[in-house]
Image (cartoon, rainbow, N blue to C red; front, side, top):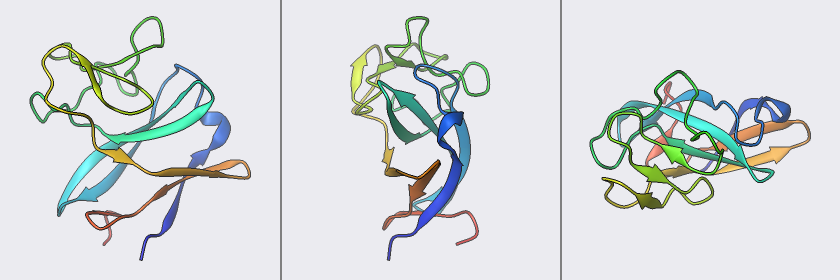
Amino acid sequence: MPRHIPLCPADALVNGGRAVAFDVRYCGQVCRAFAIRYRGRAYAYLNRCTHVPIEMDYQEGQFFDDTGSWLLCATHGAAYQPDTGACAGGPCRGGLVQIALTEEGDMVHWHTAAHLHTVEF
């Protein structure tokens, strides 16, 4: 059964700003994930480029381009749409793995799923 895991205060996510990083267990492997805010809404993805499965941020929490319009992989330049994780350009295959989020009150929660669990699982 899916669980809602507290992630961060809602105001920690600023439109086009730094991401909040967190760890998850995805398909049995511990992976980094990140949450961002884009156009007023919070989104989360595995921190794994679809071109080569490496972490995408060039500096901790830095995923947006200079305009705040695209999520970028710092290594190979793949670009992803912030609201869907879909490949928008560069060397990528498909989209980022999205993690469901909800905002309840002043807190953002991420949701476990069939292949997505807490690290302690």
